[in-house]
Image 1 (cartoon, helix red, strand yellow):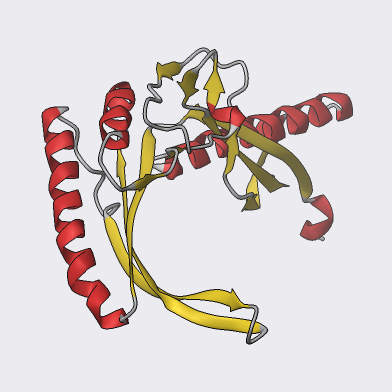
Image 2 (image 1 turned 180 degrees about the vertical axis):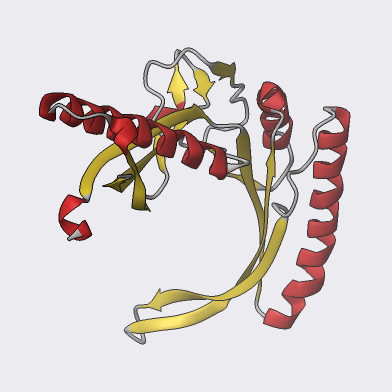
Length: 232
């Protein structure tokens, strides 16, 4: 039967590429005893923040990655423990406005980050990195897996005294792992980071090397299984 003549070979493939997109997160907050009072306060501050971001990006000739600019507004109740009542009681309301965006001008990330950090009354998170086109690393990982599969299949054919050209691909399946951001220890590509006015900010150690911001890489894996059947 033909099924008995099918040979299945599998291998893991992987690819690692430099990140090419930097993501930023900024937020502003306000507190008020009346929740409905927060919206006009935050709206005014948010408009000013958005203008400042646009000016910084324009000055540095940086463009926002398509569909990466997102905003959100939320209001939470602020509680404080009352010893007399022996319970938490409402202590007003806290509203926050968040802005997320990404840029691909990694050579300018240091200057942009520095200027954003100098804006008043904002919370600026450390940037994180990703890929603008993750399909490219998918292709690289799949290619690596296929080369390994074909090498193993060719070795088996050689040991058994037959030729790979006598077979063709019958079926195949690929299973991709999740993208894995590799902490960039020891990597040479880095960007100077200015941290003035950031005494209250803590940064993850893996982002730095010799006080310089490191971009890092994305590592991706795929499991490939290929079935070959004879052509004769």
